[in-house]
Amino acid sequence: MKAVARARSQALCSAHPCSEKAPKPGLALQRGVADPRRNISLEHGGVLKRRAGNAETLFKLGHHQLPMDLRKRKTSVRATASAAAAVPLSSSPEASPLHRFVQAGLTTVSGGFDVTACFVKWSAAIQIFLLKHPNFLTKLVLALFYMYDALVSNLDKDPEQATLTTRKLKYLGPNFPAYSGLMVGDINVVKQLILGPQKRGPYIAWGRFVTKAFPDNMLLFMSDKAAGGTGEREQIKALLMDLFTSEAVVARGKDEVAQSLVSAFAKEVKGGEPDTFSFSTAYILYVVFGVTPDKATTELVTKGIVPYSIFRISPIGMFKWGLSDGEKKVRALLAQSPLVTGADLKGYDREKFLDALMPILYIAAIPGPATFISYTTALLPSSFKFDFGSDEANLNAMYEAMRAHPPVASVSSYLQQPTEIDIDGKRHLFPAGTKVMYSIKTASKDPSVHADALTVDVTRPNLAAHVLNFASFGPENFGRQCPGRMVAERLGMDLFRNLGNLEFRTTPIA
Image (tube, rainbow, N blue to C red; front, top):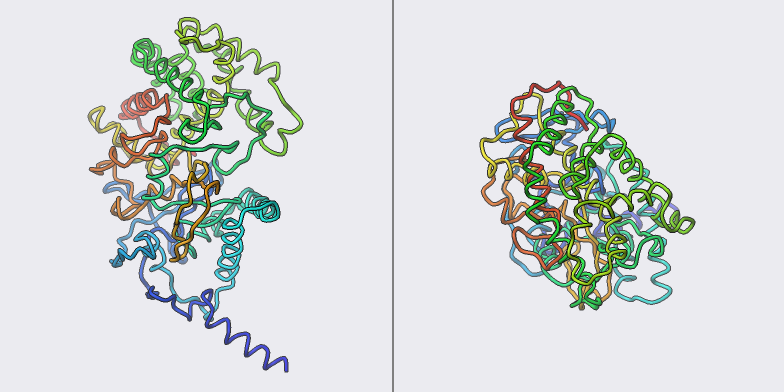
């Protein structure tokens, strides 16, 4: 009897969508078709990596082939830019071209049945059902899935193992359920989300933060007025845009003090032991806020970066509200800075404005440039010449580095209306209010926009029009563009120029 039951089970499995023996209707699985996106790591804060069997592969930078070793991450990163076989992309509304591109690379698994595929697809089917039928019970079950996803994402650090979202990308395509919501990587859907009004919640990427641990005017958590917000977000954002793009900030970014900071950091990079966060802190304090970047001031701010985030993320944040003594000193420093003392706040309360500045400083203004710098230098070989000859060329190189390694991997919001999204070749209608995380990391490597998406090519002609960083789509945005974009771009151009003629150590920094 057991033999009969086993035979029936195997027969059912071979006909199940999880089995590579059973091709999906309307989608021909092609053995041996290469797909440069199959094994991209999508974990937040992770690094780009790809495996091709046991073969050692390389990452191309223009005409360079780059062996990479991110020593500080204890990670051996190898990515390939070998030409993929041509895969015809369907224009069928049942499946996006990007989804078909990813799925076409799946090959028959040895033995005919992929247990991982079965687990991923059945798990996705359950979560899709729960998301389509929101109520107290389904939200409770989704919370369990969220905890599981968060736990796996934080524990799975081995680059040689398929991570949670990497497996979902492989078996489900660029859109899939994750973290009690939807992760969306289809660039067309991402564009719609970026260029439309956004209803926000207490999330940064997929991490849930404790609302009471932040001020009421925490900009990243505030919804657009068109999405049910009060309009206060737009008021704060307008003030920040005026201040961060003011003549004083532009002038400081070009003056001798700022250039000396960049030059000194470039020499640290050459020596192999750069203090990226201290540099980012000193640069932002001076260029944006006008604060003299002495060692004591820089250390005061830098020491609070990690604790500020850790003690406000759920569930840890439930036990610590308000500002620590060190954070209060930083707040006082900002209050006395030239940026704030000389600001015309147009009737907005000064204390509330300072409340809004603290999370911007600790979560975006300092970590953003630091992450970009780390990722950029990690992508480049020891022999590479950074200076591309002009500010325009250097800026394009910065966009390409951010495309390959977005400092912000994903952004969370909520659907404003019932929306159809393709998952695993099927269209699913999700109700308004569904949490959705648009993946900048996945969409930035869409092959329909960027040819040879895993090749770092600083001469790409369409980068400026498709850059997904800074909460914008190229030059377009819905009023949520990062107010520090101009400062970050100035920093990137100056950094490339200062690094141009330096001789680097063999192992790139992490």
